[in-house]
Amino acid sequence: MTEITPDQRDAPIFKTFGELFAAGFSLDTTTWVFILTVHIAAVVLGGWLIFIAPNEWALIAAGWIVVHFILGSLSTTVYSHRLISHTAVKNVSIPVHLFFCFFGQVLSVQGSVRRWSANHVLHHGVDRHGKKELDPYSATWFPDTLRNFLWSHLLAHLFNHPESDAFLRSYNAKRHPIIMLQDRFYGLLITFWIFLFPMGLGYALGGWLGFVALLSGSVVGSVLVQHNTWTVNSVTHLWGWTKGLKSSAVNNFIWLGPLGEGNHHGDHHDFPRDYRNGFGWSGWALDPTRYIILLLRGLGLVKGLNHANRFEEAEIIAARKLARVDQLKSLNKDAAALYAHWENRVMALRQDWLEAVSRWETLRKESKLLQQANVSRKELTQDLRQAKALVKARKEEFFAAVEQLNYRAHRYSR
Image 1 (cartoon, rainbow, N blue to C red):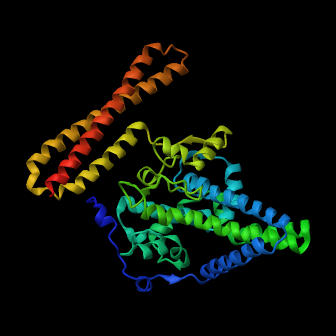
Image 2: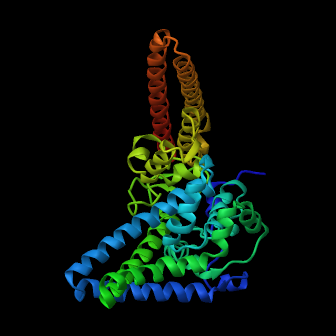
Image 3: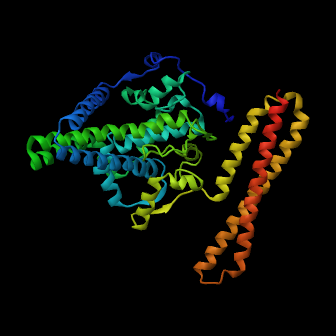
């Protein structure tokens, strides 16, 4: 298949929302009525908590909101997203499935794990096959930012999408018995955890005042979790600093939500199986979901972390740099000969960098094997230091050459 360009990938396919109906979309009455009702209730009950509720119950409800928000958000990012949609680990234990399926993920109020995961797999599938019409919450379907934001953030969830073989394959692929059971009884689970449980507990603790207070906390918490997750669909595909290679996703370097996955969303789309959300120190610092997965591994509840190695990371970063250069090449047709010299130098430095990374990775693996065998590592220590220093030097040379090439490209285009 011919590789599509970023412009082709992000070209709009609809002009207005009205065109969706002709394409086979229809409003999902149950969903839009539920979401509208819950949002109205959140505003009313939130106002009651702020202006009317006694301080004691307002504080209790606020605590309930915080706990609900954290559990619901992390359940989406840890379980629905990384563990299930992307199989970021090789083995997920039964207790993890049970906790998230029958409690944690229900608090996100975004559909069953099976359905959520199926839609998200379609969202990433576009990066491979380019069939953007299959992406259920694309942020590039329309010609203007406002429509793209409204669709990807909210409206996509209010429509019945045309049924596709791709969705059915993705949906049927998630056949873990616990996930299938949650899918079957999802409506009952929502009714219990979002409404009956907080209302019953609140009434038991404080009569009708407790009833309303904990219901308020549950409803407001649900709405906050929804919008926290939806910002990843919308904001991280519309605004940011560094675009990924394979999608419209962008690295934002913002701790969204704060438990959203947007800060390194371009990295995520370029290597979605990674249990991490991004490369480098900022990927570590802005990724609370990663910490939970590492905690689960430490407790023996998940095993076998999938992640990009240093060489794969370097390939992705280098390709992004060169993609920027490729965009400028079209501006410099009259200076092709001069440009080619610098382009060849950049490509040679890229290869030097990748070879240095590969050498470093090999030495690191050898060092680990020796350590496991209780053999002295002294003979490898100096080689490791030199290999790491060479990686840094080659990377800096490559980056500098790319900047020089960009500078010349801009000069030639005048």
